[in-house]
Length: 237
Length: 310
Ligand SMILES: Nc1ncnc2c1ncn2[C@@H]1O[C@H](COP(=O)(O)OP(=O)(O)OP(=O)(O)O)[C@@H](O)[C@H]1O
Ligand SMILES: [Mg+2]
Image (spheres, each protein chain N blue to C red):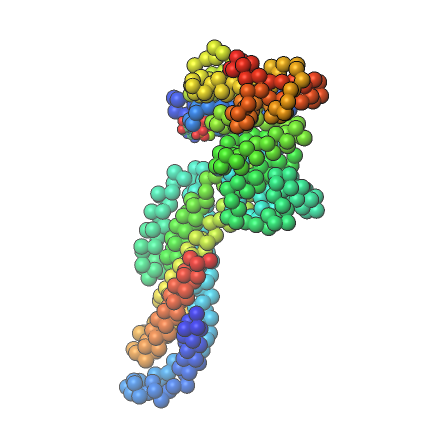
């Protein structure tokens, strides 16, 4: 936990310091006239990046949870293998390919990025919801029906609370996948930590590419670390 | 009052309950007795529509159960399920309060009722109210299950092997408590068990199920009369049938109206002949004094008389 906080602090300090390290970037990239990324604040980019990732994770959570609930009852049970295959396929398509395919339909910006991220992150939520709901003991469901609870009541008051720990693990995976993948959105013009990479590539400015790549990778590592910590915590609690 | 009219339940082409017709009169305890897989739970679960009959119908108080929507029906019928099934994420008090909450009782009324019920099933409210199910022993959990079924004071109770997971001592204790509760509340109880002693200890009437069919029914003493059918003999065991029969006969009926001479061991008049036999064996005496109670004028019970009705 302390190590994670220290890393977050170091990351934020580096974001703040990057624009002030002109001397360093000049020394590393003597051929470039403007090696320091200063068109946008790194904190703005980070904010937009997180907004995009968390927004996508939220949508993925709603879709994954809905599908998981549907697949564990009534008519949905028969469709479970199909649903699972569809979600697995959606995740198997690389997000950058989804963006490329969606661009003509959705245009530039956040929309195609959100779509790619949602497709990528919905699978773990769906699977965890199915696993968690499946694990509710049949005797408990029987008691719930026997006491006269309705379907909605059983879902809201018995099944979801009991499945929550498993679902939470799936949600964490979705959030982290999303944070670690959002940078590709820069290809579609979505403003995020990946933006300096794309802009740098377009202008032949390797210094910007390096700075963007550095912070994107670092954030993904932090997210991954937070996930591991969270999963261990979840398993214990 | 519950009435099964030609009730059948098929799974595939196998009838696991087969044309059962049975009445459970108001205020009585009817025990469904049968081997594992004989269809006891299935028959019982048709009363609160957890299972729907393939043919025939089930009436509660003269009304076909399918005329009431399942949720409303179930809130009016206490159900103790075979595997306890407490809600693991709720405290004991919330578990007990399940049906009152569904019925929209006020919080204060629910709290009073919960404490009342915990005391009734022998759990000190102060100690148990706030525990989670995993903090209970098996017997305590079954008591909470019973309290949950009794919570909204339903006139009808369905109990599916409620004491099956318990040691014999705890089990007898809970059977005695159930009889007390029954005597105090006059509820109609349908009780499933495959334990013949439990059936004899509790039943007003016993209904014997064999492969889904009603093989025999009657008061325990009737059921165990000499010449009873093969299913009953099989279930109670040929060699111990006579012993079980003793359990169904009250000692007062064969006591001789003599004043007890000397200091004989004392047997209460409402005890069964089985208890009389046990007392004779443990005291090494062939006579017992039965003191007067109510209508019974008092008398002496002889070993020779006891072995005759068996
Ligand atoms: N949903 C179901 N689908 C198929 N078969 C079932 C179903 N429910 C019960 N059965 C079968 O019906 C038969 C009777 O089951 P039931 O649970 O009523 O028996 P039981 O007398 O309560 O047994 P036990 O004492 O073991 O609880 C069994 O052979 C069982 O396998
Ligand atoms: Mg059963």
